[in-house]
Image (cartoon, helix red, strand yellow):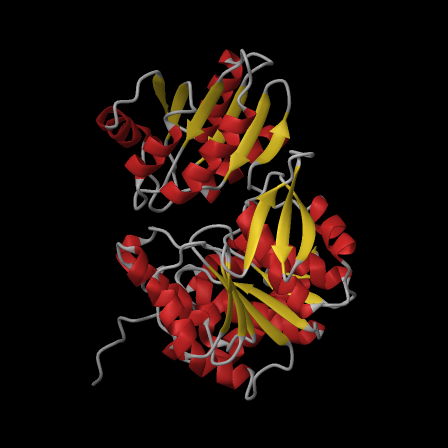
Length: 430
């Protein structure tokens, strides 16, 4: 007599299940949250798509700035009249944010339908939450018949589920240290993983002005037409107007806003956009990106005092954020920092980058998987020689405390994780 199975998985949601029901179930169907590799995803992809989708596949990888580049490309394609699907992760308030169809979040009905299709196709293949959602995004884009799929890599590149589709065009935004346990602890190794999205003979852009040799070597080996920032295009200030910058590309000057988004990522999106939709004039391109915003990226939620949220969670992102704050720093006002982070991040690197611009700190705990407690953040702060800080249980309480102590001249910055920003946005919305 066979012993009973000990590998029972919860039954998939029944007809009429909500998005929330599906998401709760997705969290339970694979033994680990992150399980890099393409073999399992490829099996299910081939069941869903026996042939490569007819759409143009545009893949964006990088340490930071991916969301900005996706939004830039998406905006230019839509400005040119093309239909576009954009896939990004993670989300802030609603999972539907991850899948955009022509600029609009996917509806619950369309998302559930895509989930059902993936579940029907996977059979006994085990997929992670991210892998399942990635395939569902592909199904949604195919069902909508959009012409261009702009896909943000979740982690790394070479072994990320998004990379199961061959890119027709690609962007690598930046290369720095993050996710050390999965990607390695140096730029050469990480660059190799990011460059895994490249395919033979395609057009690609690298926004990092000093790419590791591993990126350049892979591009050369695959005969990729690679445009590198500082070598094939450059970003220059406009002395007469400090609110703008100039992208110099093929002897053409395109005005870009020196706004809240990382300009290197915007410029990379524009360089690729010029390749994809060459009919747009440089003035139309400039106007298209002038008002571009990305939720959670140096996003101002309130004035008097200013409250800015940013999802930056590694030293590279923190250095960018510190520079933005230094340029904005009020006088005689202060910068008050609310920081909450995940345990697997380089906390010391982030604190060191932000220390020169933050006058007062509130360290908050994150009650989420891999979330770090406030006391642990204090230990890191003491090791970095920080002073003028308080430990608070939650982001809500830390934000309330910063608001209570602030004046109208101060700026409060809430940062460290998508979870951190999501909680701050919910608090201020309430």
